[in-house]
Amino acid sequence: MHPLNLVVLILSFVAVSCGNNSSGYSKILKSSVDKMISNQVLTDDELLAIIPSSEKEFSEFYSYTYPEKDSSVHKVFYQIDNLIIKNATENKNGFLKKYLELAIFVDGEYAESYAEESEFIICKNPTSFCGLYENLSQRSKEFFEDQYLEYCKKSNK
Image 1 (cartoon, one colour):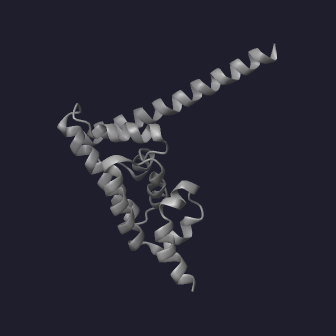
Image 2 (spheres, helix red, strand yellow):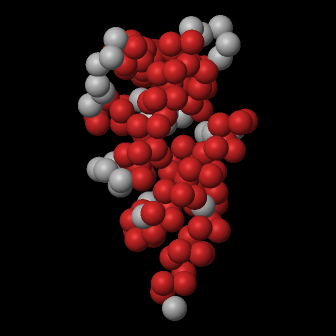
């Protein structure tokens, strides 16, 4: 096989794989929203799986607030968001770090409420936040640098 053909084959595989991951997120998000619309409870694992981990996932997640969506979908979006915040505040396994990593993707009016919610969550969990800070992405560290200086540096003095 010619090396150029091999490169094309590999790039095609990567493109298909990345696309499948995105559609996997779409399916998980949609099934979780449908489940909540039918008054079923989401497990912690289901909630963790729908916390966005990329800009594309965040765009899809936040699209559930768009006017063209049904009002029941809007209501469920905010219920899901509140459950995620509640679990991050309670520092349930994995929620705090994954919630803090949203700092990389949030924008618009969601970013405003996110800044307030994350500040509240960090205030409730300063020890956990300080322990997680070094493992956050560089962009999240930059976003939470003030909280790090306030909650973590003063406790090291």
